[in-house]
Image (cartoon, rainbow, N blue to C red; front, top):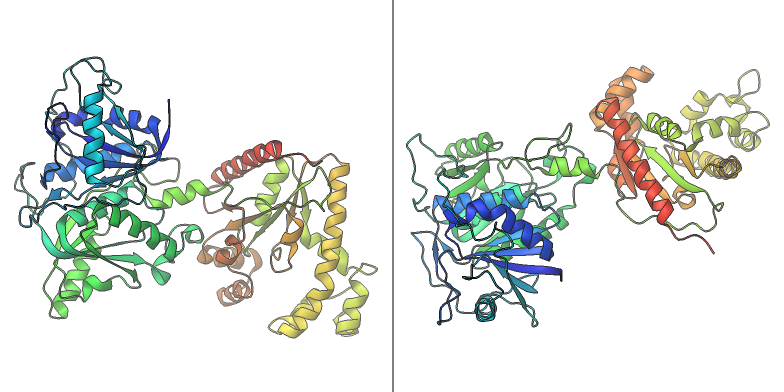
Length: 562
């Protein structure tokens, strides 16, 4: 069976009847398409008649919005698929402009068009497929060699009739009043509105929020994208996509689903954003979590002489398979947690390193729990090189750095027994970049040489993986002698708490220590694998075991040196 990168699924069955079959329809589609799946709703369309069917407007009702949510929720079981429900033909009652006469361009032109339309005998009936292909190409830009597949009866048990759903779908938009609302009730349209969020790794819950906003807005949608200070409280902020990348993905999705709208994507730098100050806005789409923030926006508007916005509160999308410590909703935070232990970028090739030795450079800010990770890796079979211990060897009398350091900084840095007083030496270089560079220019190359000797020892002992535990791995340029950089991250507030507890420093001294180091973000930007000790020890252990297992797989699959 051929597999296509992008596809268009045309749903022709009335919505209430297609709901019971939606899961198998999506499963069938996911077997044929592996990247982008566009969905076009045209309930009631007949592909079996003599006349070529035309796209017609679909009334935007609460039933339609609830169906869109249900479809995105179902698509969450196929996360390799980027599902996009096209809204061009979905119209609110108050605004019914004519359907576009031109073909709509899509970011990923479909290579195959699929449908749930049922032929009488369940066969791949050519005239129906031809009608389907002509319909698809009359609406959207498709690949020249467009294929077509009739999914029925693949998605259904034989010829069983499809019974409409008796129980209505859960409401996407929480009702503003307790009065019962009909599923067939039309949704009111507005000229301009707003929606905001972080939109990291655009997922199906984001798509529900954005789709509702796009249906409600008829002229312009302002999209606030959280940046800078608003990101600090996020879980694992070091793994957030850069602002420009998030905006790029958002823009492509929005233009695909409703190109007739004008989109204004702007950085959200405070809790109110444009929703708090733009007098032309009429509505704000919020989630259950951000509803209070929406109410705060309205209070702020009233205080500044502006009218309140109509708030549309969207129910959260449940994650059907949350893991321990993950939220039970579809969220970017959970996706970032799932990245821990994964390879984020290709490893370095280091032919100059001892053959048969795969070297990991392990780093992290002070208090991150880096040393505990090193011990866990040692327990799994790694040879661990502690750069602090190498430093002690380098500074010891007779050690390779001893004489050069004494000559550079004088004998007043020595204890009475002739050993270097590292506290005195540290106070001499702390905050003095020139003096610090003199010291590191002496010590770092010495430690690097000692580390290379340790690698040879690891090979002699038959160890396949050597881990260099070094807080200054990247500052010292030692990433040039490792295949992969692994970084341990925790929030700065937690790092301060741990340093105070472990070293007896004041909070100010702990913060000063952290500020003198590379930040977690700077470390992650150059890392291949990221880990975190933020949770219980058994969660950390599971992360390390996952990272180790993936590492062993990479090593076994790597081409051997000639």
